[in-house]
Length: 201
Image 1 (spheres, rainbow, N blue to C red):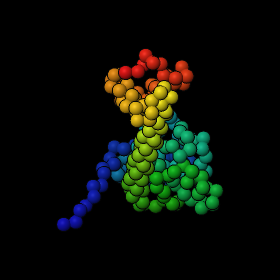
Image 2: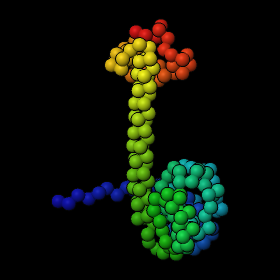
Image 3: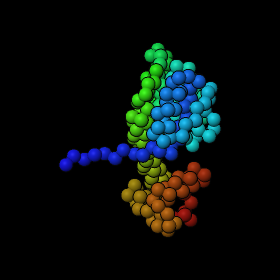
Image 4: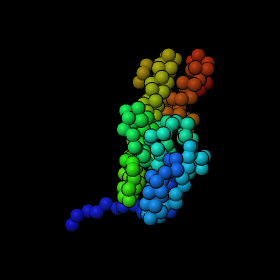
């Protein structure tokens, strides 16, 4: 028996269409309404309320950075680029905004639903990757802090092994994690030029 992936129900979602008044907007609005989405069309910029949108369609042909209430490439929701011109500069601009899907203009009577699903999946994957990178960076930073703390304690007369044991002892006495204890040791070292003897276990 083949496994069928779950297709999400998009009914009730809210989509903003950032495009000048045009037949393209009407075509997109009809398809979105048929799917059950609420549609808000706007031009020349997105209003602040768009920050709560579920999807944003934006025009590549006449688009510019100041239209968006977020930094370039940092949309907090899935975005779909509406592409008419294939001029290299316009495509490069669209790529800089990290669109999650695209629709070629002129938009006909189909294509919007698949663009929504692709954009949603791509956005989710991009967010997962960003979270994983952030977690790895945090772990690396924490390890570097532990190394700095051990080095600071080594300067107080401990060898590395005893310095690490001392750091663990401090963490237990302070009832904090090893990483938090390391941050405290590093902070004291930077503030006082060394770890005060009274802070030792």
